[in-house]
Image 1 (cartoon, rainbow, N blue to C red):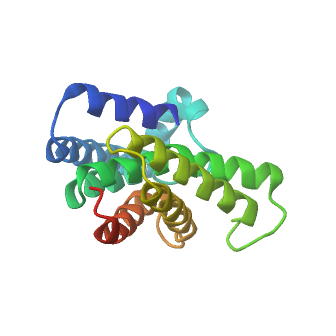
Image 2: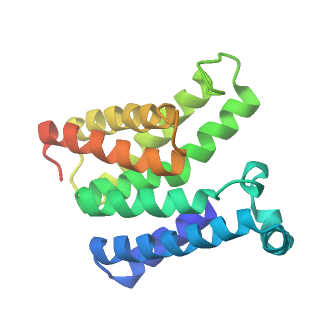
Image 3: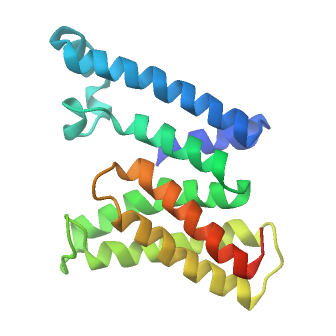
Length: 192
């Protein structure tokens, strides 16, 4: 969450456009992808990287491309393809809902859905995404019951996006599918 919050703060405080941020993330993602490819092909380079970055990496990232590459590309494409406000909400889903859903699922999940996902984790995701949408939106638009409904639907969209991470890393899928879903429901509510 800390890395995502830092990236979000950089974006908000730097006053750069969504396209400029997208370009920056695509460039960073490409550089890290090349370094990760080299790391995975060279045992020596991998050992060096793991000695420095190992404590910050997930166990699975030690032997495959790190989640940052997927994060950079997913957020970059979301900022490029969707309205800025909806793209930011989608990225905030990734920053907060993904890890909180995972924590709730690991510690309290009893009802298995599929691929390690639990009903309890998914419901936590719905709640986090709905709250995030409402808090972000209320800062920009006046309160209305339609905003509450929009936030609740957005909660389900964010949680469903997290469930749809079958073949590609969730850092890539969550912001893109959330951005698409939010764009489609916004056509009805017309907030953004």
